[in-house]
Image (cartoon, rainbow, N blue to C red; front, side, top):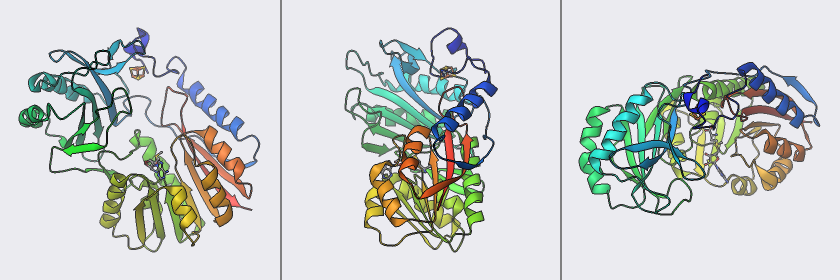
Length: 375
Ligand SMILES: C[S@@+](CC[C@H](N)C(=O)[O-])C[C@H]1O[C@@H](n2cnc3c(N)ncnc32)[C@H](O)[C@@H]1O
Ligand code: SF4
Protein backbone atom coordinates (compact mmCIF):
# COMPACT_ATOMS: atom_id res chain seq x y z
CA UNK A 1 0.00 0.00 0.00
CA UNK A 2 1.29 3.46 -0.85
CA UNK A 3 0.87 6.24 1.70
CA UNK A 4 2.08 9.69 0.68
CA UNK A 5 2.05 10.84 4.31
CA UNK A 6 4.37 7.99 5.25
CA UNK A 7 6.67 8.63 2.28
CA UNK A 8 7.26 12.25 3.28
CA UNK A 9 7.64 11.30 6.96
CA UNK A 10 4.48 13.12 8.17
CA UNK A 11 2.99 9.99 9.73
CA UNK A 12 4.77 6.83 10.75
CA UNK A 13 1.90 5.16 12.60
CA UNK A 14 2.14 2.14 10.27
CA UNK A 15 5.62 1.08 11.35
CA UNK A 16 5.65 -1.85 8.91
CA UNK A 17 4.55 -0.02 5.77
CA UNK A 18 8.00 -0.49 4.24
CA UNK A 19 7.72 -4.29 4.49
CA UNK A 20 6.08 -6.31 1.71
CA UNK A 21 2.75 -7.67 2.95
CA UNK A 22 3.68 -11.41 2.77
CA UNK A 23 6.70 -10.64 4.96
CA UNK A 24 4.51 -8.77 7.48
CA UNK A 25 2.26 -11.79 7.73
CA UNK A 26 5.12 -14.28 8.04
CA UNK A 27 6.67 -12.21 10.83
CA UNK A 28 3.41 -12.03 12.75
CA UNK A 29 2.90 -15.77 12.47
CA UNK A 30 6.49 -16.36 13.61
CA UNK A 31 6.02 -13.99 16.56
CA UNK A 32 2.92 -15.92 17.63
CA UNK A 33 4.64 -19.29 17.24
CA UNK A 34 7.54 -18.12 19.42
CA UNK A 35 5.15 -16.92 22.14
CA UNK A 36 3.38 -20.28 22.21
CA UNK A 37 6.59 -22.34 21.82
CA UNK A 38 6.36 -23.69 25.37
CA UNK A 39 2.97 -25.31 24.84
CA UNK A 40 2.24 -27.89 22.15
CA UNK A 41 -0.34 -26.67 19.62
CA UNK A 42 -2.34 -29.48 18.00
CA UNK A 43 -3.38 -27.47 14.94
CA UNK A 44 -2.06 -24.26 13.39
CA UNK A 45 -4.51 -22.80 10.88
CA UNK A 46 -3.66 -20.44 8.02
CA UNK A 47 -3.82 -16.72 8.91
CA UNK A 48 -6.96 -14.86 7.86
CA UNK A 49 -6.35 -11.64 5.94
CA UNK A 50 -8.50 -8.88 4.48
CA UNK A 51 -7.96 -5.76 2.40
CA UNK A 52 -4.61 -4.06 2.85
CA UNK A 53 -6.00 -0.54 2.49
CA UNK A 54 -9.30 1.26 3.13
CA UNK A 55 -10.22 -1.35 5.74
CA UNK A 56 -10.98 0.89 8.71
CA UNK A 57 -14.57 1.74 9.65
CA UNK A 58 -13.48 4.24 12.24
CA UNK A 59 -11.57 7.52 12.37
CA UNK A 60 -10.38 9.19 15.57
CA UNK A 61 -9.27 12.64 14.50
CA UNK A 62 -7.50 15.17 16.70
CA UNK A 63 -8.79 18.60 15.72
CA UNK A 64 -6.13 21.31 15.52
CA UNK A 65 -5.27 24.36 13.43
CA UNK A 66 -7.59 27.34 13.37
CA UNK A 67 -11.37 27.61 13.27
CA UNK A 68 -11.21 28.84 9.65
CA UNK A 69 -8.68 26.22 8.60
CA UNK A 70 -9.01 23.22 10.90
CA UNK A 71 -6.79 20.16 10.59
CA UNK A 72 -8.08 16.65 11.30
CA UNK A 73 -5.47 14.08 12.19
CA UNK A 74 -2.95 13.80 14.99
CA UNK A 75 -0.31 15.68 16.91
CA UNK A 76 3.32 14.66 16.91
CA UNK A 77 5.00 14.36 20.29
CA UNK A 78 6.42 17.86 19.92
CA UNK A 79 2.90 19.19 19.28
CA UNK A 80 3.18 19.60 15.50
CA UNK A 81 -0.19 18.87 13.91
CA UNK A 82 -0.60 16.56 10.90
CA UNK A 83 -3.70 16.38 8.73
CA UNK A 84 -4.57 12.73 8.10
CA UNK A 85 -7.64 13.14 5.88
CA UNK A 86 -5.73 11.45 3.05
CA UNK A 87 -4.79 8.40 5.15
CA UNK A 88 -5.34 5.37 2.89
CA UNK A 89 -6.54 3.20 5.78
CA UNK A 90 -9.93 4.96 5.48
CA UNK A 91 -12.39 4.21 2.69
CA UNK A 92 -12.00 6.82 -0.06
CA UNK A 93 -15.48 8.26 0.55
CA UNK A 94 -14.38 9.37 4.05
CA UNK A 95 -12.53 12.25 2.35
CA UNK A 96 -15.84 13.92 1.42
CA UNK A 97 -17.04 13.55 5.01
CA UNK A 98 -13.80 15.06 6.37
CA UNK A 99 -14.03 17.97 3.97
CA UNK A 100 -17.65 18.78 4.93
CA UNK A 101 -16.72 18.49 8.60
CA UNK A 102 -13.97 21.06 8.16
CA UNK A 103 -16.47 23.50 6.64
CA UNK A 104 -18.85 22.75 9.49
CA UNK A 105 -16.23 23.52 12.13
CA UNK A 106 -15.77 26.95 10.53
CA UNK A 107 -19.53 27.59 10.11
CA UNK A 108 -20.34 26.59 13.69
CA UNK A 109 -17.33 28.44 15.12
CA UNK A 110 -16.01 25.39 16.96
CA UNK A 111 -12.53 26.58 17.87
CA UNK A 112 -10.05 23.69 17.80
CA UNK A 113 -8.52 22.94 21.19
CA UNK A 114 -4.95 24.10 21.45
CA UNK A 115 -3.06 21.72 23.71
CA UNK A 116 -0.17 24.09 24.42
CA UNK A 117 -2.32 27.06 25.36
CA UNK A 118 -5.11 24.94 26.89
CA UNK A 119 -7.59 27.03 24.94
CA UNK A 120 -10.30 26.22 22.41
CA UNK A 121 -13.24 23.82 22.51
CA UNK A 122 -13.21 21.05 19.91
CA UNK A 123 -10.75 18.29 20.80
CA UNK A 124 -11.61 15.30 18.62
CA UNK A 125 -14.00 14.07 15.96
CA UNK A 126 -14.84 10.38 16.24
CA UNK A 127 -16.46 8.70 13.27
CA UNK A 128 -17.71 5.14 12.82
CA UNK A 129 -19.32 3.86 9.65
CA UNK A 130 -21.66 0.90 9.29
CA UNK A 131 -20.70 -1.43 6.43
CA UNK A 132 -24.29 -2.65 6.47
CA UNK A 133 -26.12 0.55 5.50
CA UNK A 134 -23.39 3.21 5.14
CA UNK A 135 -24.77 5.13 8.14
CA UNK A 136 -22.26 7.10 10.21
CA UNK A 137 -22.00 7.84 13.92
CA UNK A 138 -20.28 11.17 14.57
CA UNK A 139 -19.14 12.34 17.99
CA UNK A 140 -17.77 15.77 18.82
CA UNK A 141 -15.44 15.66 21.82
CA UNK A 142 -15.64 19.10 23.42
CA UNK A 143 -13.81 20.66 26.35
CA UNK A 144 -17.01 22.08 27.80
CA UNK A 145 -20.63 22.79 26.93
CA UNK A 146 -19.95 26.43 26.04
CA UNK A 147 -20.19 25.91 22.26
CA UNK A 148 -22.98 23.37 22.37
CA UNK A 149 -25.74 25.85 21.47
CA UNK A 150 -23.72 27.03 18.45
CA UNK A 151 -23.16 23.44 17.39
CA UNK A 152 -26.88 22.64 17.65
CA UNK A 153 -27.84 25.71 15.62
CA UNK A 154 -25.49 24.81 12.78
CA UNK A 155 -26.30 21.08 12.84
CA UNK A 156 -29.19 21.08 10.29
CA UNK A 157 -26.74 22.31 7.63
CA UNK A 158 -24.38 19.41 8.39
CA UNK A 159 -27.20 16.88 8.32
CA UNK A 160 -28.33 18.23 4.98
CA UNK A 161 -24.81 17.90 3.54
CA UNK A 162 -24.25 14.44 5.00
CA UNK A 163 -27.57 12.60 5.29
CA UNK A 164 -25.64 9.42 6.19
CA UNK A 165 -24.96 10.92 9.65
CA UNK A 166 -27.49 8.80 11.51
CA UNK A 167 -26.14 9.20 15.04
CA UNK A 168 -24.59 12.43 16.31
CA UNK A 169 -23.54 13.26 19.86
CA UNK A 170 -21.28 15.53 21.87
CA UNK A 171 -18.92 14.12 24.46
CA UNK A 172 -17.68 16.45 27.16
CA UNK A 173 -14.04 15.94 28.12
CA UNK A 174 -12.95 18.74 30.47
CA UNK A 175 -9.65 17.12 31.45
CA UNK A 176 -6.52 18.37 29.73
CA UNK A 177 -4.65 15.75 27.70
CA UNK A 178 -6.19 12.83 29.56
CA UNK A 179 -8.19 9.97 28.09
CA UNK A 180 -9.80 10.73 24.75
CA UNK A 181 -13.42 10.86 25.91
CA UNK A 182 -15.24 12.01 29.00
CA UNK A 183 -18.16 10.37 30.78
CA UNK A 184 -20.85 12.82 29.73
CA UNK A 185 -22.42 12.10 26.33
CA UNK A 186 -25.09 14.45 24.97
CA UNK A 187 -27.21 13.00 22.15
CA UNK A 188 -27.82 15.40 19.27
CA UNK A 189 -29.98 13.09 17.16
CA UNK A 190 -32.95 10.98 18.12
CA UNK A 191 -31.26 7.85 16.82
CA UNK A 192 -28.47 6.81 19.19
CA UNK A 193 -27.55 3.39 17.78
CA UNK A 194 -25.90 2.64 14.48
CA UNK A 195 -26.91 -0.68 12.98
CA UNK A 196 -24.20 -2.97 11.63
CA UNK A 197 -24.55 -6.52 10.37
CA UNK A 198 -21.92 -9.26 10.15
CA UNK A 199 -22.87 -12.69 8.74
CA UNK A 200 -26.58 -11.80 9.00
CA UNK A 201 -26.21 -11.06 12.71
CA UNK A 202 -27.47 -7.57 13.61
CA UNK A 203 -25.02 -5.65 15.78
CA UNK A 204 -25.42 -2.18 17.23
CA UNK A 205 -22.89 0.56 17.85
CA UNK A 206 -23.48 3.31 20.41
CA UNK A 207 -21.21 6.04 21.70
CA UNK A 208 -18.94 4.72 24.46
CA UNK A 209 -19.06 1.11 23.34
CA UNK A 210 -16.12 -0.73 21.81
CA UNK A 211 -16.54 -1.94 18.26
CA UNK A 212 -14.04 -3.75 16.04
CA UNK A 213 -12.26 -1.40 13.60
CA UNK A 214 -11.64 -3.83 10.72
CA UNK A 215 -15.15 -5.07 9.84
CA UNK A 216 -14.06 -7.42 7.06
CA UNK A 217 -11.63 -9.42 9.22
CA UNK A 218 -13.80 -9.10 12.35
CA UNK A 219 -16.75 -10.70 10.59
CA UNK A 220 -14.50 -13.61 9.56
CA UNK A 221 -13.29 -13.88 13.17
CA UNK A 222 -16.84 -14.12 14.51
CA UNK A 223 -17.85 -16.60 11.80
CA UNK A 224 -14.87 -18.87 12.51
CA UNK A 225 -15.46 -18.69 16.28
CA UNK A 226 -19.09 -19.66 15.58
CA UNK A 227 -17.98 -22.66 13.46
CA UNK A 228 -15.55 -23.90 16.12
CA UNK A 229 -18.14 -23.54 18.88
CA UNK A 230 -20.90 -25.25 16.88
CA UNK A 231 -18.57 -28.17 16.14
CA UNK A 232 -18.16 -28.72 19.91
CA UNK A 233 -21.90 -29.25 20.35
CA UNK A 234 -22.08 -27.25 23.60
CA UNK A 235 -25.33 -25.86 24.99
CA UNK A 236 -24.08 -23.28 27.52
CA UNK A 237 -21.43 -20.59 27.27
CA UNK A 238 -20.19 -17.32 28.67
CA UNK A 239 -18.91 -14.47 26.53
CA UNK A 240 -16.65 -12.43 28.83
CA UNK A 241 -15.53 -8.91 27.76
CA UNK A 242 -18.38 -9.26 25.27
CA UNK A 243 -18.61 -5.63 24.09
CA UNK A 244 -21.73 -5.36 21.91
CA UNK A 245 -21.96 -9.17 21.91
CA UNK A 246 -20.41 -10.10 18.52
CA UNK A 247 -18.96 -13.46 19.61
CA UNK A 248 -21.82 -14.69 21.78
CA UNK A 249 -24.52 -13.63 19.33
CA UNK A 250 -22.76 -15.49 16.52
CA UNK A 251 -22.22 -18.64 18.60
CA UNK A 252 -25.65 -18.85 20.28
CA UNK A 253 -28.19 -21.20 18.75
CA UNK A 254 -31.88 -20.99 19.76
CA UNK A 255 -31.38 -23.35 22.72
CA UNK A 256 -27.94 -22.13 23.84
CA UNK A 257 -27.74 -20.63 27.31
CA UNK A 258 -25.52 -17.60 26.80
CA UNK A 259 -24.31 -15.12 29.41
CA UNK A 260 -22.47 -12.04 28.12
CA UNK A 261 -20.47 -9.87 30.54
CA UNK A 262 -19.03 -6.46 29.75
CA UNK A 263 -18.06 -3.42 31.83
CA UNK A 264 -19.67 -0.82 29.51
CA UNK A 265 -23.41 -0.38 30.05
CA UNK A 266 -23.69 1.23 26.61
CA UNK A 267 -22.26 -1.86 24.93
CA UNK A 268 -24.59 -4.11 26.94
CA UNK A 269 -27.60 -2.07 25.73
CA UNK A 270 -26.45 -2.83 22.16
CA UNK A 271 -26.02 -6.55 22.85
CA UNK A 272 -29.51 -6.76 24.37
CA UNK A 273 -31.00 -5.05 21.35
CA UNK A 274 -29.34 -7.62 19.04
CA UNK A 275 -30.51 -10.56 21.15
CA UNK A 276 -34.04 -9.22 20.99
CA UNK A 277 -33.87 -8.78 17.22
CA UNK A 278 -32.61 -12.37 16.88
CA UNK A 279 -35.37 -13.64 19.15
CA UNK A 280 -32.84 -15.41 21.41
CA UNK A 281 -34.67 -16.59 24.54
CA UNK A 282 -31.88 -17.92 26.71
CA UNK A 283 -29.41 -15.09 26.73
CA UNK A 284 -28.46 -12.77 29.52
CA UNK A 285 -26.19 -9.74 29.01
CA UNK A 286 -24.99 -7.87 32.09
CA UNK A 287 -22.81 -4.82 32.65
CA UNK A 288 -20.28 -6.13 35.18
CA UNK A 289 -16.59 -6.71 35.75
CA UNK A 290 -15.75 -10.12 34.27
CA UNK A 291 -13.65 -11.38 37.18
CA UNK A 292 -16.23 -10.22 39.73
CA UNK A 293 -19.00 -11.97 37.81
CA UNK A 294 -17.01 -15.21 37.50
CA UNK A 295 -16.10 -15.26 41.20
CA UNK A 296 -19.73 -14.83 42.28
CA UNK A 297 -21.24 -17.35 39.89
CA UNK A 298 -22.02 -20.89 41.05
CA UNK A 299 -22.89 -22.48 37.74
CA UNK A 300 -20.18 -23.45 35.26
CA UNK A 301 -20.86 -23.27 31.51
CA UNK A 302 -19.43 -25.79 29.06
CA UNK A 303 -17.44 -23.10 27.28
CA UNK A 304 -16.03 -19.73 28.34
CA UNK A 305 -15.10 -17.30 25.59
CA UNK A 306 -12.84 -14.40 26.55
CA UNK A 307 -11.88 -11.37 24.45
CA UNK A 308 -10.11 -9.02 26.87
CA UNK A 309 -8.38 -5.66 26.28
CA UNK A 310 -4.61 -5.69 25.64
CA UNK A 311 -3.75 -6.42 29.27
CA UNK A 312 -5.30 -9.91 29.02
CA UNK A 313 -7.60 -11.63 31.50
CA UNK A 314 -5.11 -11.54 34.37
CA UNK A 315 -4.38 -13.66 37.37
CA UNK A 316 -7.78 -13.44 39.12
CA UNK A 317 -9.82 -14.59 36.16
CA UNK A 318 -7.26 -17.29 35.33
CA UNK A 319 -7.62 -18.55 38.91
CA UNK A 320 -11.43 -18.65 38.66
CA UNK A 321 -11.29 -20.43 35.31
CA UNK A 322 -8.89 -22.94 36.80
CA UNK A 323 -11.29 -23.61 39.69
CA UNK A 324 -14.47 -23.64 37.59
CA UNK A 325 -12.84 -25.89 35.00
CA UNK A 326 -15.14 -25.42 31.97
CA UNK A 327 -14.54 -28.04 29.26
CA UNK A 328 -13.44 -25.41 26.74
CA UNK A 329 -11.98 -21.92 26.74
CA UNK A 330 -11.99 -19.90 23.53
CA UNK A 331 -9.53 -17.03 23.82
CA UNK A 332 -9.63 -14.17 21.30
CA UNK A 333 -6.83 -11.70 21.86
CA UNK A 334 -5.38 -8.54 20.34
CA UNK A 335 -2.17 -9.04 22.33
CA UNK A 336 -0.65 -12.49 21.95
CA UNK A 337 1.90 -11.69 24.64
CA UNK A 338 -0.67 -11.33 27.42
CA UNK A 339 -2.64 -14.26 25.98
CA UNK A 340 0.42 -16.54 26.11
CA UNK A 341 1.02 -15.48 29.73
CA UNK A 342 -2.62 -16.20 30.65
CA UNK A 343 -2.55 -19.59 28.90
CA UNK A 344 0.61 -20.54 30.80
CA UNK A 345 -1.45 -20.09 34.01
CA UNK A 346 -4.16 -22.46 32.74
CA UNK A 347 -2.17 -25.61 33.29
CA UNK A 348 -5.14 -27.98 32.96
CA UNK A 349 -5.77 -27.00 29.36
CA UNK A 350 -4.10 -27.99 26.10
CA UNK A 351 -4.04 -25.85 22.98
CA UNK A 352 -6.22 -27.47 20.36
CA UNK A 353 -6.17 -24.85 17.62
CA UNK A 354 -4.71 -21.41 16.85
CA UNK A 355 -5.49 -18.95 14.05
CA UNK A 356 -4.11 -15.48 13.39
CA UNK A 357 -6.38 -12.73 12.04
CA UNK A 358 -4.60 -9.79 10.44
CA UNK A 359 -6.86 -6.98 11.56
CA UNK A 360 -4.12 -4.37 11.67
CA UNK A 361 -2.05 -4.57 8.47
CA UNK A 362 1.19 -2.52 8.31
CA UNK A 363 1.63 -2.62 12.09
CA UNK A 364 3.06 -5.30 14.38
CA UNK A 365 -0.41 -5.89 15.86
CA UNK A 366 -2.71 -8.79 15.10
CA UNK A 367 -5.66 -10.67 16.57
CA UNK A 368 -5.51 -14.37 17.48
CA UNK A 369 -8.13 -17.00 18.23
CA UNK A 370 -7.12 -19.97 20.39
CA UNK A 371 -9.18 -22.97 21.44
CA UNK A 372 -8.20 -24.56 24.75
CA UNK A 373 -9.50 -27.97 25.79
CA UNK A 374 -9.42 -29.31 29.32
CA UNK A 375 -7.15 -32.36 29.73
C1 LIG B 1 -11.17 -6.18 22.92
S1 LIG B 1 -12.72 -5.52 23.43
C2 LIG B 1 -13.75 -6.85 22.91
C3 LIG B 1 -15.21 -6.56 22.74
C4 LIG B 1 -16.04 -7.64 22.05
N1 LIG B 1 -15.75 -8.98 22.48
C5 LIG B 1 -15.98 -7.51 20.56
O1 LIG B 1 -15.79 -8.51 19.86
O2 LIG B 1 -16.17 -6.40 20.05
C6 LIG B 1 -12.62 -5.69 25.18
C7 LIG B 1 -13.85 -5.30 25.94
O3 LIG B 1 -13.65 -5.54 27.33
C8 LIG B 1 -14.36 -4.56 28.07
N2 LIG B 1 -13.79 -4.56 29.42
C9 LIG B 1 -12.68 -3.93 29.87
N3 LIG B 1 -12.46 -4.23 31.15
C10 LIG B 1 -13.45 -5.08 31.54
C11 LIG B 1 -13.74 -5.76 32.76
N4 LIG B 1 -12.98 -5.62 33.83
N5 LIG B 1 -14.82 -6.56 32.78
C12 LIG B 1 -15.62 -6.71 31.69
N6 LIG B 1 -15.38 -6.08 30.52
C13 LIG B 1 -14.30 -5.29 30.44
C14 LIG B 1 -14.17 -3.31 27.25
O4 LIG B 1 -15.17 -2.36 27.55
C15 LIG B 1 -14.26 -3.84 25.81
O5 LIG B 1 -15.58 -3.79 25.33
S1 SF4 C 1 -1.86 5.78 9.68
FE1 SF4 C 1 -2.47 6.36 7.60
S2 SF4 C 1 -1.29 8.20 7.20
FE2 SF4 C 1 -0.28 7.21 8.92
S3 SF4 C 1 1.29 5.88 8.02
FE3 SF4 C 1 -0.56 4.63 8.25
S4 SF4 C 1 -1.56 4.77 6.28
FE4 SF4 C 1 -0.12 6.48 6.37
